[in-house]
Length: 272
Ligand SMILES: NC(=O)c1ccc[n+]([C@@H]2O[C@H](COP(=O)([O-])OP(=O)(O)OC[C@H]3O[C@@H](n4cnc5c(N)ncnc54)[C@H](O)[C@@H]3O)[C@@H](O)[C@H]2O)c1
Image (cartoon, rainbow, N blue to C red):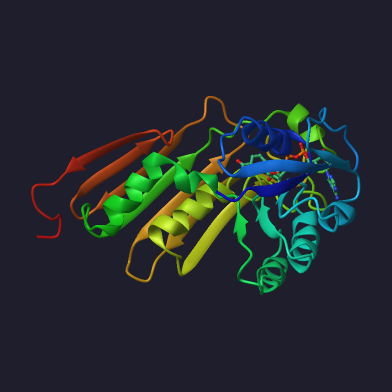
């Protein structure tokens, strides 16, 4: 198998976690050959790894074939576009960008289709949600009528928001719980149920923390086929809950903590 040489930019919480996984050989065919950190300290390098403080130099160094972008949100667009233009494969942490126009600019920069451009939506590989997707797409649970997802187990402290200097601010993070913690849940929501036609939401800014952005959200959605959905999230509740409930023609499907599925099957369709 061909070995892909990857460079990681941003060695904070997530960058270090990815580094540990790749170094541990968990991704066959992938080897870290460069690390880039502009402000923080880099972990000790091991043989074959080169350190950079300027991401542009890392991208053009010839030391990497691919880049993993683990920097704060607003830099994803700039670094991502530059990396694609440098002819690298690009894997960008969620969210791919903060604003829709920036997302579109980044996606449009992926012109060389021989290079892979992907975003880190790792929850799609969760066995439980893959099973839910299969149960919906195969028609096993019948047409979805109503969805309720309460995901309030994202509790974060004031200390968390004070770290990194960019969290909890419009300028640094571009949003709160919806932009940082929930991209996974919202991605799964549209992956499983499609895009709603109408969304109405109540976002409370700094309800539980000393932050500018939203830390408590209740959203109501309506789909063309009459399906309705609610999505509730918060970083200020403990104990929180992570419960997805799907009411469908053939029964009720419940997913708890992204690890347990319960399907109560109707003997016949609800509407018959
Ligand atoms: N996939 C997941 O489950 C998951 C989980 C947590 C965070 N994330 C995402 O990972 C990204 C990083 O989050 P984090 O919690 O690791 O943040 P962090 O603040 O802990 O780390 C970011 C690092 O990037 C460095 N940095 C910033 N700009 C840079 C630049 N231009 N060049 C080089 N280094 C630079 C900072 O010095 C810092 O060390 C965010 O997009 C976040 O949403 C994803």
